[in-house]
Length: 217
Ligand code: E4P
Image (cartoon, rainbow, N blue to C red; front, side):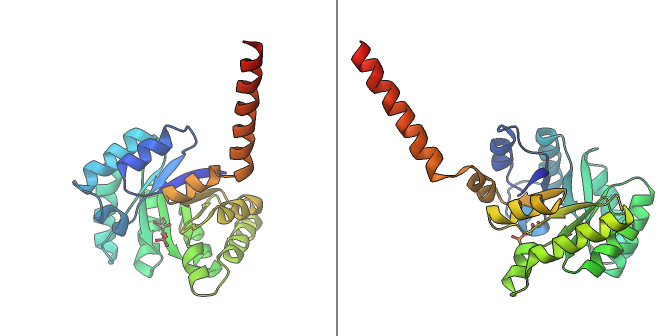
């Protein structure tokens, strides 16, 4: 399963990329708006660091505007993926951009029916938002299971990009279901490392080693 980081922070992306476990990046207008600098230049820097798929989202809501912004985003770097919302114009733009060979990530997906539309429109990625579903007392991971099954049934090539991940169990569950990718905030990637038995085990190994060396010295 691939791991993407969901942030516009170049510093955080550099830190996580240095671990050697980062496959890509997702951004959205809220995330990019928080960062200093021009967003196209920031996206270019992110592509240079990650050298994997980097999603940049259109802010236009009409087909013509999405196409214009989509071309603009795709021109930033070969790694750019154009993110469009799951609306009628978004699906139309997804079909048109995909037909031109531009990779598209269909975002703000909250139902299996919507995921089916994204695959039919040739999306490279579909982004079900699991955390936001959990927030409204609906199991987000149930949606991921449905999408994986539907895509398997028809051998759609669209990759299931589990988004809005809030904790490590979202990632573990997604991996068990066979989802292709999880995108998570930096803090959730950090949390994947943590286990108290690793910390206490390492502490004991080092203590025992030092004790034995002191006796031998
Ligand atoms: C995905 O592409 C989105 O940027 C993201 O995962 C949204 O997550 P949130 O619900 O934590 O804002």
